[in-house]
Amino acid sequence: MAMSEYDLVCDVCTQPLESHDAVVTWSSDQRGEHDFTLAHLACAPPGATEQREVRKLIAPNEFLRFVTDRFGRSNDDPEPLRTIVWALAPFVLRPDNAAEMDTMRAASFGAEPGVKPGSAAPVRPAAPATTQVDAGK
Image (cartoon, rainbow, N blue to C red; front, side, top):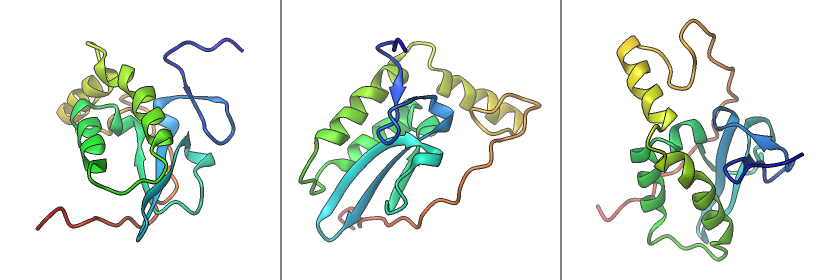
């Protein structure tokens, strides 16, 4: 199967994935953040304590928030995170960013971003409990 340079690939099953069916997961504990994974929703590692849906992460402000939230946090192996950031960047930086357009369109109709009007939203698995690190408060 030929892959475009802008295709996303699941870290678990190695198959192509679409932004609406993808999630970034990782674990956060006393060691810091680790085990970053880009995966299909169905392939997401069950032991991950944190996750963000890619359909939201490709919105410019959400992408920047995700990246800047990683600053100053301990990460013994930053390469998986770096790879994920580089993989998502082309989707965020496009001048016709579909996520940004979907967000504006959805906000105007009261719908969910990434879901075509008149379509049912996909069933998503329950998100694991997340933790927030006190940001110097």
